[in-house]
Length: 206
Image (tube, rainbow, N blue to C red; front, top):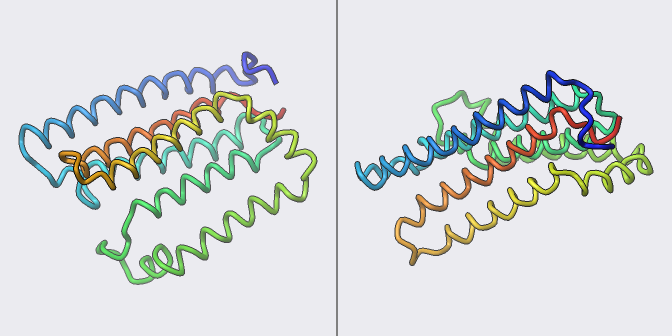
């Protein structure tokens, strides 16, 4: 499909606006976190379940919603591809939120941590892969088309950025490495969100 063709101009306008808001929001968030960290000496800014990590969760939740909405609204036929990324974003939320430390009902901890979390994610991923496998030839072609899209390129950049954040986390010789690890991770999740926003008006298969 020609990426210059947009089936729904309204979705394209929404996508353009969301990209601008997301980039601006990232810059404001990094600036605010840096001010708190280096000027006010507030090291809680990058602690578990605090500002940067909570923002990461919000970004992942938004990415999940946008991929899901795009699959339903933009005329996509290869729905399992955006659904996979929606589930992946959901997995990122589980990765960042330590439900066992939160003051939530035990049933939530049981479902969202440990074996409960693993079962939920396994069911979701198996469902997506099963849906794709049932139309293997179609999804093979769709996947090859997907590899040539901006969404894929942004996804790769997001993955590389998240990998870089893990390297920073292990680099204890870097001053304030925990702050930089969380900040780089936020950038990675933001790139993932941008890939979802770019996908919104651009179905892979019509």
